[in-house]
Length: 107
Image 1: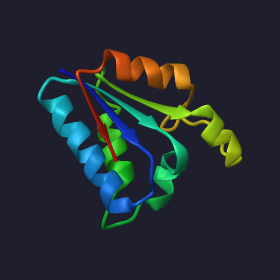
Image 2: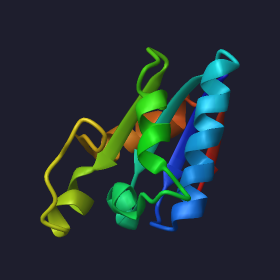
Image 3: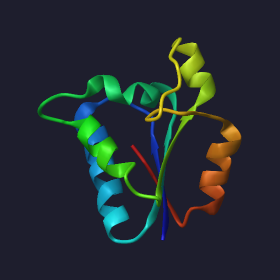
């Protein structure tokens, strides 16, 4: 299955659970793409000992079936630079993610 996950918030527990689900789906053999939009591009700032988002991201990106994309406009509006874990992307990429995915989940 091709799973698309859209993260649009900074709530640490919610984002941690979204990433845990993404990692579980990868282990089940699925292809997973995560698109960060709005506040979602700030997802790493809410990393904590209790909700170790960074650990989930590192595990996720080990797979060839995993990809993270981030809204370039949202990054620019926050004066935030693109990184490996928050790479600049576009609405076209979000559209393609929606178009090609079997299921879309939003967090």
